[in-house]
Image (cartoon, rainbow, N blue to C red; front, top):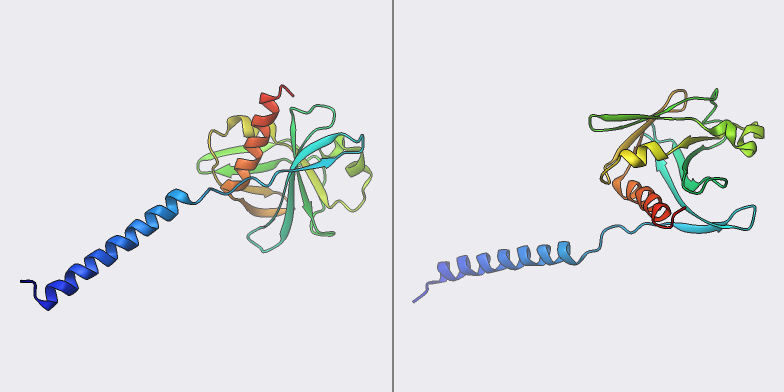
Length: 176
């Protein structure tokens, strides 16, 4: 015969087990963050794919990060960092420092290669060659971006790195 205290103990074990099973099912069924890649028409009426995200640096400044293929060479991806007017004034070229764990990269500043940005006196954007970073990354690791005279540390979450890597993979698979 089971006494009342044993019944309560058994019930609490069953309740705990049900909670564990529920949590496990949620983790197994929930889908990971999906890429938010979008398509747009460029100035030549050619449909292009891009990744667009707004992030805050550690000083709570908001920056927009746009990754898109170069118009003249579709297999090269460009990272454009856009600050609000007055928040980004750089002397180009200025390398973008990228860190993740013990690894680090310096991405080349290609802002002056873009005639629109070259002629824009607001200096609100900078562009960098993203290819060397993406070729070296083997997983979707969080990144930390630093730009001298721009921002000290801009965290890039893994879901965004996944978007960028998937864009590179799509372009490689399509032979672009």
